[in-house]
Length: 73
Image (cartoon, rainbow, N blue to C red; front, side):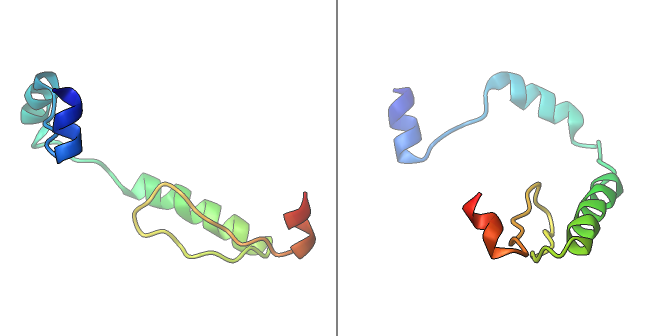
């Protein structure tokens, strides 16, 4: 039954999470901390010559190496 639900696209949150989320609806997160860390990483990589697209809301970054010889390592 669990597999059928996932295959058909019907996945509901566990009851524990439903209870926790109902109590956290009014909470918020200070995203400026994440923006600061992202900017530090992006600035450091840009200073080293890496090219990349600055992420708008993700926790990952895909830099292009500045040196073709680094691809062989």
